[in-house]
Image (cartoon, rainbow, N blue to C red; front, side):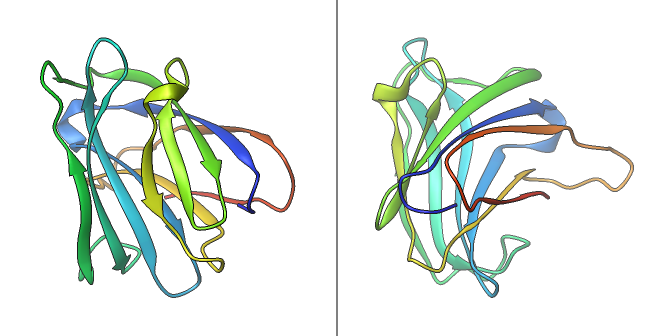
Length: 142
């Protein structure tokens, strides 16, 4: 995902699989934002980490969090997120509330987007649909 690109991601969330992870990776490490709910006006509950292995383990450091009042966990079902790549970060929001975006830091080499549940289950097939605007986007469903 290159600077200036915008991407919408539709993810079917199953509550037993924990939070929704959106990762922006290079070929060695990922920066991860874990989304676990929102308020009625679209403010996201999140935790973010930098320089993690692709599986989300062994992160170098925690870089931010938000636990807004009135937040409810995401219910089971489809959720659509808007990702917007900027020079040194990526904005993440619900598609319906872009003004409530949270920020995930990202270096120039972080160009690969991965979307997955927190708890992977090999017996469950995840459906992730991407709709993009822009060019040079490498997409992967984890």
